[in-house]
Image (cartoon, rainbow, N blue to C red):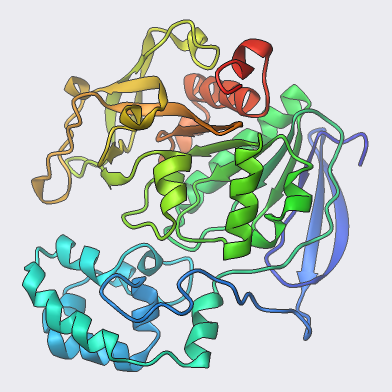
Length: 390
């Protein structure tokens, strides 16, 4: 593998694997194919495993317990009856992992007091060992053998998704990053296994890239590994769906690592042309893109401005260039509307861009340049880049 510039690890099955090397258009891929193994161990330290049932539980956990679902249907008959089917799935990836009964009631404009009997009924239910196991089933602790190709920086492209998976966007981003790695002689390893998020694995990489990650995907041990890695100087890059869940169950991720919580996106129409404005023309991440450009995409708004909590804003949206009206005519205007920013997390570096719903955005030269420069910065970059997060 020493002559290869990127490696692709496909880890959709379990424990036992065989390795195949492919060479396509000059790009060497290491594909790990897993087979089922009887001694594969399930995750046991998943978040919320022991949390009592409530209107703030992930909806999937309520749906997986027949008694809980019956209590909801009895206490608030319209709540699940009127919910779109896409919100009621029980096999990840599914939207039900990123919403709660409280947020579902908000979508349906159900009065808050209607949820009181629902919450009381759910709180009275027990949690069985089988239900704890079911809650943990969407997490994994599998760790394939790591074989990092030659190249710098070393990058781990992470693709485990339990929530909403927009496959065309995920695949377009992955292809764009693979091409970027080949062109720049980076070492890129791709995985969809949370079991790779360990101290021993992470210390071998300069940055981790979150590819449209939706839903809670890391066990408590894996969360600690990622947080320690970043706080001690690791790099983190994330885009679009990685900051677009209606509900988060890991506050540090949403409020510190990303730095803002999703509010909504336009529905009238969903995809629109909008003007992106470069905030600082001297910034090494976006200086080539100044003063800005126009792009067609799904435009996120956030509940809070990341600038208020110390983010360094790279680019903003010109809200006069598109219609920021959300579901039910929701007003999504932020006034000052950051769309891409960086954050210093102790000694670590975090970059987030809300661009990236349409697959075509990953072939847009401006967005490609933004991501490429952000990856270099997050992975250590030049001295000027490092000075931002000493």
